[in-house]
Amino acid sequence: MIPEYITWNADPEIFSGFITVRWYGLMFAIGFWLGFNIVARMFRREGAPERWLGILLIYVGIATIVGSRLGHVFFYAWDYYSQHPWKIFATWEGGLASHGGAIGVIIAVLLFSVFVTRRNPLWTFDRLTVAIALVGGLIRIGNLMNSEIFGEPTTLPWGFMFVRSAEWNNEFYGLACHPTQIYEAMCYFGLFALMMWMYWKRNAGERPGLLFGTFLTVTFGARFLIEFIKNPQEDFERAMTLNMGQCLSIPFIIGGILLIIYALSRPRQKLEYPGRFAPVESKAKSKEAK
Image 1 (tube, rainbow, N blue to C red):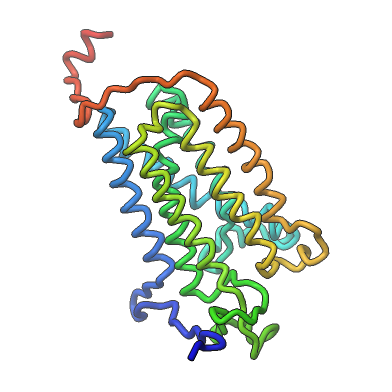
Image 2 (image 1 turned 120 degrees about the vertical axis):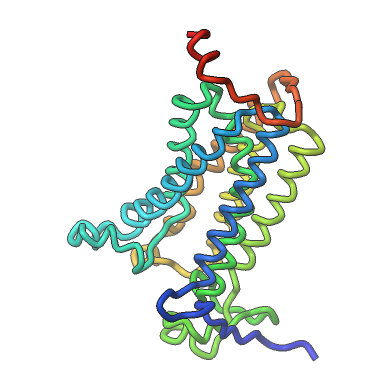
């Protein structure tokens, strides 16, 4: 017999005490760890300096947290934070926006390319976004464990009753809702598999901008479509034809399509694959070079 709905009663905390560990934080940490190792394999394959990895991790880590927080502040809740600016720093109270995180990472990679790699930023974007697709899927699993960011009521047998959610109990009690966190996670995991295949099997890194363009188009295209069945995150969105998440997704989708066209219209750039990190130059050699 097919169930009419799924009762979701997962505890967002793995354990609590002197230190509380939540599933969301764990998914975030696992994503960064896996992502770091994936990018490390790519850098090693192409003979990039190993020291770039640690620097990139710092740039992206800070940019993700700061960008996501400021994205929430300015895109979704500026009326509140403009009156309570000290609350901007209260990240433990929740409030992160993926579009803000994306903008933060873009700025970080541009700075990383200018001050560290001295390469076309597309080289870093193409490799980094493969890992980000995986991180995005894991973060949505974290949202599922928090019983947050779910969808409208549905009669489909995989609808979830989010019994731990205050929003669900106040607005949708007794109704199963779309588990939009799972929909997005599936899209991002599928994108991750596609981009891994493109990089490792089709050498897509030889077409600058192709992987980055694919990431932007699929990630924000999926986000745009799923938003049609997702509940508004803020009250002001209820009066909008397209909600804030959809409006913010459109420029990324257009940018992604343009990048794909750009990448496919230019000659393939043949790369070397030495399979090891670039040798570390000694200080003496570095001074001689100068």
